[in-house]
Image 1 (tube, rainbow, N blue to C red):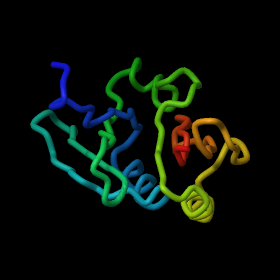
Image 2: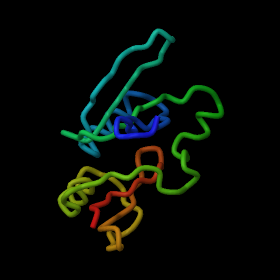
Image 3: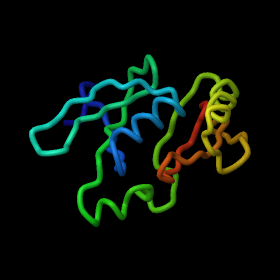
Image 4: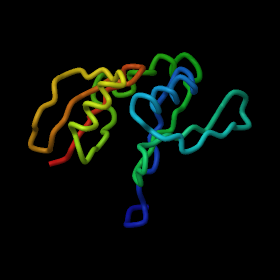
Length: 133
């Protein structure tokens, strides 16, 4: 399976409810709804969102099903940064996200790998907003 024809296309993010997650990703991060299809299994949907114009990986919003998954909502990485949102203009996106109510966990900082700040999604999963060096 390795080779030039393979890529990671989606990362599943457990959510409590599809519609509230869609609104948050759209209104706070500026993501686009790529797909929203009802599945045969009752109440299940295939919901894919990604940054506007992105050609890379997207997120699959997966509604938690059952106690184990519900307990993992917002803690999928055990308190570590879970996802990395790359940008070509850190300050533009940082200021825009803050204006839309995204809560950053720290002040922006320069690292060897780029300009970065950690933010939490609506459930508490941690993300890096990162402009690579």
